[in-house]
Image (cartoon, rainbow, N blue to C red; front, side, top):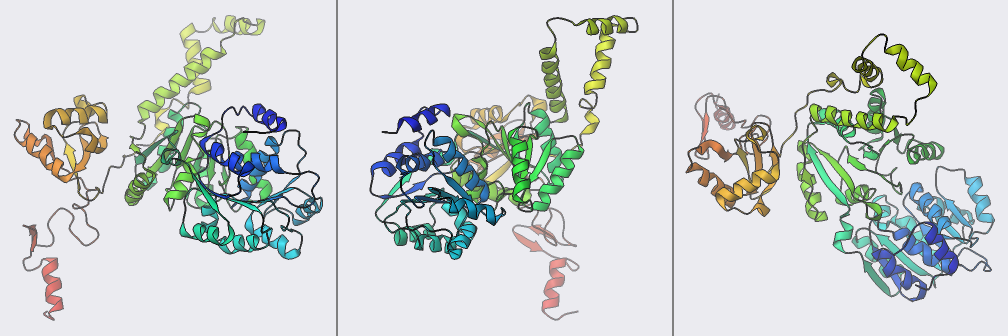
Length: 563
C-alpha cells in the first residue's frame, strides 16, 4: 500500500498482517485519491485504522496548525481513537489532543495551545472551543466523522454542521456510519465534494463472527438466568447492557451481593470514575461490565466471550453496535439477548433487518450449571497439583492421615474451598418463556413429545417432522424443546399439513395448534377473551353467542339506553 517503514513497524508490533476489507478499500483512497469517502461499516471491522493510517502518513510535522480533526459521538470513542493513533504512529512524533466533556477545560486548552497536528473530540466540547477561538480548523487537510449515525441519534447534527462550516474548504472528508440515513446524505451533499461510497458486504455488517442467541423468560427471572449463564460458561468475560443507569446500579448491587466481580459504566460517572472502571475491566480485575448504550460507545476490549442484552435496545443499529463488541479479529463469541413477552416482535425485527439467525436456547438447568462447576473445579485442582511436595505439605498430609482417609480429607478440602459453589439451593427455580406471538402468516404448533421421549434438540425434532410429513426443515422455526412436550412455528399452510398428517396416525393427538396461555389468539388482554367462558355467553363460529348476563350483552344494552 506504499506505507512508510515507521507505520509498517507499528503495524507489525500490533500483529496486523493483512488489511480488513474496509482498510483495503479506504487506505489507498485517502492516500492517493481526490474524492471524499462515505464508509458504511460497523464497530469491529477495523475502521479506526482505515482512516488513522493514511492520516498519520500524510501529517507534515514541519507544518503549523491542526491538520486533521476527528469527530466522535462519545468521549470513550474519542479516547479509543486517540490511543489507536498513538499506537499506529510508530516513531513519528505526532501530537494528538483529545477534547471532550467531563474533563478539565484548562488542561485541554493547554494541550491545544501546544500546537497539535490531530484533534479528536466530541461535538459539544469542540463547539465550545471554537466559540472561544481556541480551536481553529481552517488549516485541516482531513475531517473525519466516526459513527455519524450515532451522532445523529444523539442530536448532534447542528453541532456537526457548525464544525464543518469552519473547516478548510479544501479538506478531504471521510464519513463512517453503520447505516446511511437521509440526514447523512444531506450532510454529504452540502459539505463533501465528489464522493466515493465504500460499503462493507452485508455479511460483515451483521457480525458473522458472533453467534447470536436469545432466551425467552420473564422479567423477574433475568438475574437468575444471568447468574446461571455466567456459572455455566468457564472464563465468562463480558459486557451486560441495561436500559437505564438505575438498572445498571441495581444489577451490579445484586451481582456483587452474590459474589460476582462486576461494576457499572454509565452517564452518572465522571470521567475519572469511568476510566477507573474501564481499566479494572481491561485488566480483568472485574469480569462483568454492566453498561448503558451511550457509556459503552467506543469501548474496545480484547478477548470478550459474551455480550448480554439484559434489556433489548430501542433500535437495530444499537443492537448491531452492541454485539460489535464481540467477534473481533476473526474470533467467534456469543451475543445473548434476554427476551420477554413484550420484546418478541423486536427480536424478530432485529433478526430480519440484520439478516442473521438468532437462535433460541434454553436457560441452563441447575443440574447443568452444577455439572459445569464441577468440571471447572476439577480443572483447577488438576492444574494446581505440584510436581514436588514441599516439606510443609508432606507434614500436613502426614498429620491429616492420622484422622481421616484420603477420600475424607479430599471431601473436607472441597467443602472448605468449593462447598457453597456446589450448593444447588443457591439457585431459584425459574420457568423459561416460549414464543407467545407467532409471525404473521405463521402458526405455532404443540408437539406432545419432548426430551423425556428422546428428543434431545431442535434438529432431531425437525428431522422427524420432515420424515413424517415431507414439510421442508428450512421453514420450521422457533423450536422450543421441553421435558414432556415441544413447540415449533412454521407457515400456516404447512402447519395445517403437519396437523392433517398426524390426524391420520394412531397417535392423532401428537400434534395440534398451540393453545398455551401465551398464544396470541388465546389471550387477547384484560377484559377480553381468555380461553374460557365470558359471563354466561360463549364463543362459537367466529361470533359471540351472548345470553342475558353475558358481558357483551350488557354492553349492548347500555349503548341502547336500556336498564
